[in-house]
Each structure stands twice: as structure tokens, then as C-alpha cells.
Image 1 (tube, rainbow, N blue to C red):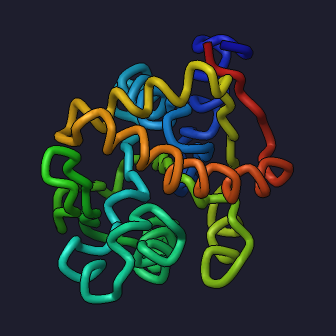
Image 2: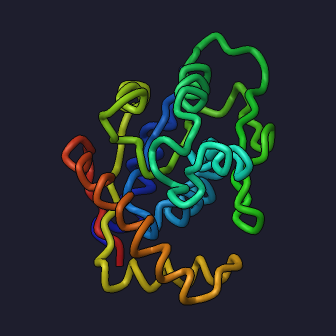
Image 3: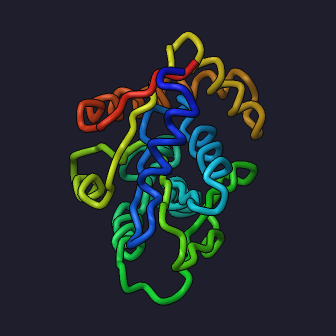
Length: 207
């Protein structure tokens, strides 16, 4: 990985300074390693940061089916973008008195779960990760202005795609279904995500 994890940790630590709250975004295509890197940073920052994934704002499967969008789960319109934006704005509020709760996304059930992640007032850095932090269409265009810094992760497709298929298999899809999903859905999302790459302050090439 270039820069190294130690360098990335130091950069994130500089954001986690006392006084106010800052938000670091980690963007990139599906399977690039966003969740892994974000989790590693939170662990290394030892209480100075909390992870709030964008995936907690997936629409529920029942709603996707009602909308006829279950086959494109993960596309920009299959998230509650307005809800995500509202949470980011609330997290930025310097006068927030109490704990803020964010939703999580449970991969075993492929469903969001409200009120799962507590963010206490004293936490100086929120790390959020997701596909569309740099997307500039529709309500997503508001996200970039709510983030202090955004990193874009890249991983060679020859490694990213097999890893993505394996992840889908691990969470319940049979392999032929997983391969079709990656080809027809995840990669369509990846091409859209790549359009925002130039809006990031830092590009991280993952090993």
C-alpha cells in the first residue's frame, strides 16, 4: 500500500486533534478495502475515532423490492442519501450535547440496523467509508462539503473482483450468482464511483 499504514494513521491522527469534530471519508469501488482500512485506522487511533459506514443507509430489502430496485442494490438511488447527509451535518455540529447514534449494515442479513453505532460528544474524528462520498449527482453532491478530507482507494481489478466474488459467497450467494452480481451490479457501481476520483485529496493504492 502506498502510502504506508503508518503514514495514513499519522495523517488521520492530525485530523483527530482536540477542539471540534472532523470527518474523514474513505471512498472507492466495491471490494477496494474501504472497510478494512477504516477499521484499522480506528483501532490504531485508540479511542480518538469512530467508524460510521455509509452502508448503514442502504434501503431495506423490502423497500428495494417495492421500488423494483433489488437487482441494483448498491446503486446511488438504493440508499437514503438524505438521511446520510443529515447525519453528517449533525456529527459536524460543534454544540452537539449528547450521543449520536448511526445505523450499521449487517452483511449476514444484507440489512441496515438503526441505532447501532454510538458517537459520543468527545470523539474528535469520525471516519466514514462508502462508494459515493465523491459522487456529484443529486443529493450526493452535498456529501463532499461535509467532509474535511477524502481518500480514494484503488485496487487492481485482477485482485479486487475475485475478492469481491468471494465476499458475496461468504455471505450467502452461490458462486455463479456472485459472479453475475459482481459483473452486472458491482462493476456498474465501480465505474460510477471512479468518476469522482479526482475530487479526493489523496489516492491510496492498496496491495
